[in-house]
Length: 81
Image 1 (tube, rainbow, N blue to C red):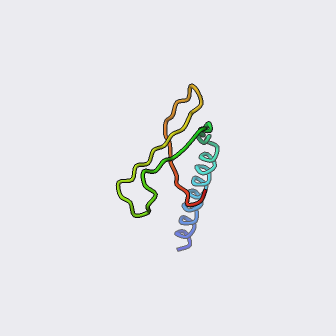
Image 2 (image 1 turned 90 degrees about the horizontal axis):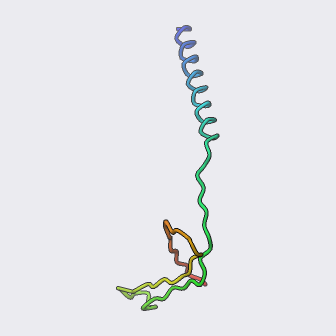
Image 3 (image 1 turned 60 degrees about the horizontal axis):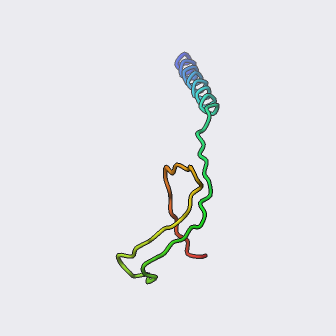
């Protein structure tokens, strides 16, 4: 029985060391970064300001810096100005 405990402890110890090495290795990998420029002259026009309105049109207008490639845009609404 003592031999079983030694074997189990050794097995757990080896896997703990492997896991720690993998985690250290992953922490050394560079994270991808994103860069963004500010959009200017932005506005949002709603076709209706009624909260219960259906089929409301949302028209966004904005100016992007020259020679900018837009890969994605996220629009967020706020309840306060």
